[in-house]
Length: 242
Image (cartoon, rainbow, N blue to C red; front, top):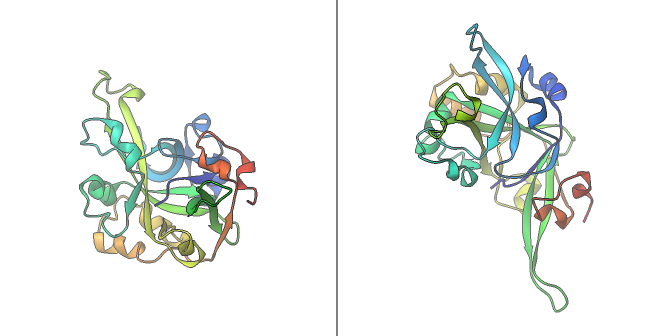
């Protein structure tokens, strides 16, 4: 799974990388070296402008942990941070979003853990590893997003009436990442961004083909500070070598 990741780039940088024409919520997504479930994250997606109806590529803040539109309560989101690529188009929670609401979730890299057994002089612990593209480039993690209507807010036009949430699609780990954990986020290659984000592209077989193989490129894996293990810790010092 992918339960924590790093995302430090701002909207100006991300807009240039992904061809975004509009962004909103500048202050809602601060740089983070320890993105955790339920945190706000930047997502690249395509939606129609409410006034003009023109489709545009947007950068929007979403809450990590997908809440299906049919959920009775939003508390399922924290558990739905990942969607397995093998079943993403079949699961009721993800099926509708896979067809129409796909996004890219930019990341500098992600964390995975390995258990370290106790010794005579030390307790057992989990050693975190930071995994990123070897060239230092950005990861465009394939994701889905959904809207959930909060029935406790009477006015549907009130922004508080809607939750915008997302999930990261995962696949079998490859390269060095596979030596740390069997799963990893599925990153798309730039050549596939347009097809993945296009809401009009709804052929499940063609969409599945985009997810058949993760983006090329080798991964760099290194052990980092165990301070990452506490979600309250945040800052570039978390990436210090262990």
